[in-house]
Image (spheres, rainbow, N blue to C red):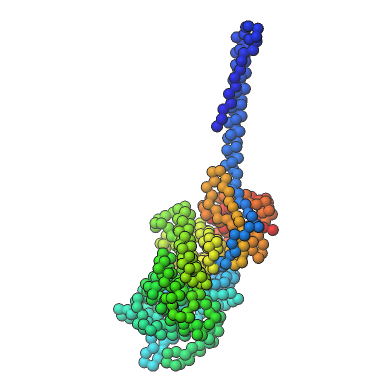
Length: 524
C-alpha cells in the first residue's frame, strides 16, 4: 500500500493578508482532491490484485530441447477369476481388452481358485497322473485371441500345493468358482532338487506352445496349442505367497528358467514380482549374477504398487492427497532400486506391472469420483516412470468385483462397461509409447494458485502432445503456449466418468481442467 500526500500554501500572502474564507475554500478543495487520489489509488491496487488472482497458471514448452526419450509402455494386467469366464460380462471384458490394443498384457492365473489355475492338482500316483487343462484353457484362449498382434506376459504363478511341505493335505473346494484363500501353504519345497517344480512349468509351457507334452510317466498329452509367449514371469509376489526368501526364490528361478530356456530360447523371463518394494536386500541378492547358476539370464524384474487410504474412513477429499503422496514415496524407492539394477544388472529391464489404488474395505461404497482419481494416479505414475526410464507401467486390473478387489477394477462388474480407469489407460496407449521425446516443459503458478498439475510435452510419432493431469478435486485454468489455439483436446474427468474421453477444439490457448482430469492436447 502507498499514500499520496498533498500540501498547500495559502495564496495572496504576498499582499500581507489572507482572507479566512479563501483559505477555507482552498482547504476544502485540497481535501477533495486528496480523497479522489486515495480512492483511485486503492481502486487501482484492488483491481490489480483481482487481475492477478484471475490470471491463469501458465505452461511454457521448448520444443527444441529434448530432455529424455521414452522407453515406457502403458499396459494392464488380467487376473483369472470367475467374472472373466462364463459370466454376463465375459464378452464385454475381452472386447474391452482387444480394443485397448495393449502390449505386454500380463495374465495371472491366481491362487484363490485352484481348479482354474493349477494344471496338476495331485501328484502322480499308482501309475497315473492328474493333468487337467480343461478349465485353465478357456481363459487362456480368450486372452490370446483378444491380444493377437500384441505381446503378452504369462504368469501361472500358483505352484501345486503338493510340492510344498505342509502339516497335511491342502484341501480346496470342488466348486472351481469358490475361493480358497489358504491354498498357498508351506515355506519349504518337498523336492529340494526342484526337478518337480521345473518339470511342472516345462510341461505347462509345452502344453500352450508346443502342441502338448510328455508327462512324468512317459505318456504324451496333446493340446493342439502353439501360442507365441514372448515373456514369462516366474511366480507372483513371493514375499507374500509362501513367504519365499531371496535365496530360495533365486534357486527356484534358476531351476525353472534353466529348463524352460531349453524349449523356449527366445522367451524372455521376468523375476522378482514383489508385492512390496521396501526390501532392498531382495534386489541386491537377486540382481547379482554371482548368486545365479552360470548361464541363467537376468532379463527382467517386476514389482508392484497400490496407493491406499491412511485410515479406513478417510474421505475422498483426503484421498487426493494420500494417493499421490504414497505414489511419490514409491517412486523414490523405484529410483533407489534402479540404481541397484544399473550397478548389478544394467541389461535387465524393469516392469512395474501392478499399479492401482485399494480402498481396503469391500463394504465401503465406492464414490463415483474415486474411479477418476484412481485413473489420474495411474497417469501420474505412468508419466513419472517414463521420466525414470522404466520399461513397462501396468495398470491393475481389468476385472475386479466384490470379494476380488472391486476397487482395482477397470470394468463395471455389473454391466461390463469400462470405467474411468480403463479410459485413462486407453487414452495413454493411443497417444504415447517408446521412442517419444520428452521436451523441456515448465509450469508457472499464478499468484495465489494452489493447483497441483502434472504436465509434460512430448514429440510423438503422431505429432506434438501435451499431457496434463489434474491431481485435485477442483477445476484449474491454464494458459497454454499460443500454438495450442485450435488444437484438439481429449479428456477423461468427472464429467465423462464411464464414457469415452470428451473431445473439443480450443478456441484460444486457454484450457480448463475438470477435477481429476487426464487431458491430452494434440497440437497441429
